[in-house]
Image 1 (cartoon, rainbow, N blue to C red):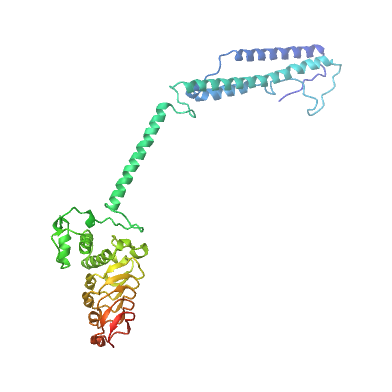
Image 2 (cartoon, rainbow, N blue to C red):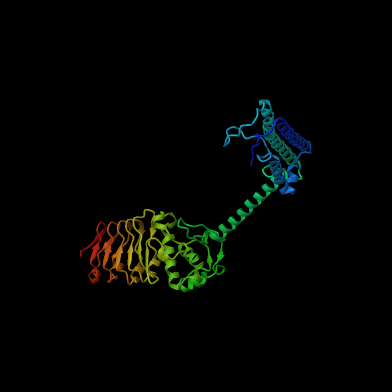
Length: 404
């Protein structure tokens, strides 16, 4: 803590001695600082990296060399606490100025020298960093990569892209099984007749003949054409081991209906799920109970063109068949009288022809029969009176003759 020099009994000789002592101390301190400045420049960045504590020690030593208030011993300034005692005799003003001036100069010079040392260190560090950046033996963070590093990075990225493409290609190939998927993501990757070689033998197609025997079908040993039956057999045979016998029958009949009536041209709202890997009970317009198809409702489909397949008669559990307002043609198959559970038949607004009533009169269990707005002909048979369960009958806008 600074202290005051008592001048109450001190004369000029005492003040002069104090002044000379302080001057000597200031001169020695100045000489030491000059010697320190003449020392070699501080170590470069590489040396500082090798000796992490050297830079901190050097900076701490510089701070310790700065003069403190305890080292400066001069009279307190006039604005300090307490008033100095009045001397017993006069003290010349120049003597007091000589005492304080060197101390203030010393403090100012110490601050300037510290700033110069910091500036010198910054310049030295920047110079070292520039040298390290140009030297290939150093790795300087934040500098641009060498040409070799750039080429290695490019090669690594190219390898990743190539590997990713291969993986994606394999995934697509395995997922589609050589085919595609519908908009719902269901697999449609089944072989069709168009994928087969000419004169392919049925025995060369796994489960093809076994399915035909199970359905009691008389097929040719060679698949020479893509008939609806061959197309349906080929489709179901590919799922033969994983589905039940009743499911194989359902999918076979529905596939024939789809192929023979231009199913690939149907809009998504009508064809969703058809001839895909999902259950036939989830195909649009199909309803089931206990794994058996009980209802087919395919209405208002302008692309539903073709004829009613006779294989529909194989669905003996079918209860409802609605195919109104389509573009069906041809006749009603005679096999319809095998559908012993059919209670509702609606074929209105099509282009069907023939004489259906003799066939339909045998369905004595029908409750509703709608065949209006077609091109049917013939007489109304007397057997119609035996359809005792019938509650709704509409045969309008046809070319029937006779009376009920």
